[in-house]
Length: 263
Image (tube, rainbow, N blue to C red; front, side, top):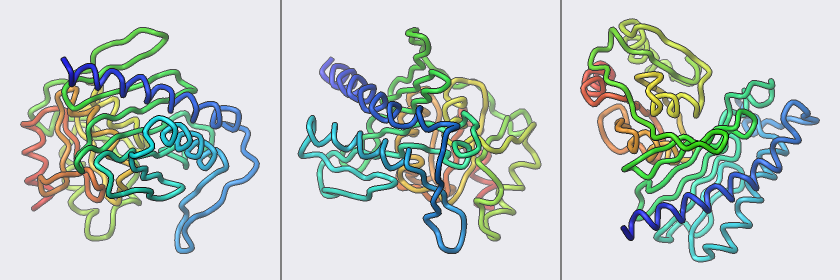
C-alpha cells in the first residue's frame, strides 16, 4: 500500500508538471515564430516552447523535491548523483510539433537508483495522458481513467511495427531494422513517443528505434512495462539510458525480434 500511495502521489505531481509545461507549449503550437537548430552537422530542432516548458517544470521540481536531480533535454543535468532523478523531455517529437502535427508529447519520468520508476506522456492538444509505474499503466482522457494492457502477438508476421523514422538508424543499424520490417505485417513511421503509448494501449505490437537519448525513453518504460510489455536494448539489456531500443507488447514477440536484431 505504501508503494501504491507513493505512486499516486508521484502521478499527481507529474500532472502538475505536465500542466505547467502545457501552459507554455499550447499557445505556441501552430503559432511558432522561430525554430533553432542544436546540431551543426544535422537538423535537431528546438523552439522557445521546448525551453520555456522545461524551465517551468524545473521550477516546480526544485520547490517540491529540492534534493532530487533533474536531467532535461534542453537545460542539462543537475545533481546527477541524487538517488532520484527526474527525466524531462518538454516536447518529444519537435519535428512534428514544428509542422503542426499532434504526434508530440510532454515526457516526464523519475529514475530511482538508476532505474525508471514512473513515467508520463501528456499530449495537451489531443487531451491524452498516459502514466505508468512499471506495475500498472493508465490512460486518462476527458477525466476518464482507463487501464492499459498490451495485446497478444507472438508472431512477427502479425505485428504492427512503429518507429520514428528510417533516417534515425545508422548505415550499420538499418539492415537489422529492415529485416524486422520486412517480416512485420505493417510498418508506420513518424510516431515518436506516441508509438510506445499506443503499444501500451494494445493498438500496436512493436517499436524499434536507435539513437535515443535517456529523455526519449526513460519516461516511457514504466508505461510499457506497466501495461504488460517489454522494453530492452537490441541485445536484451536495460534500455533506460537510450541508444538502440526495442519495445514489444508480447514477450514472445520480443524474443523473436531480438534474435533478428542481433543477427
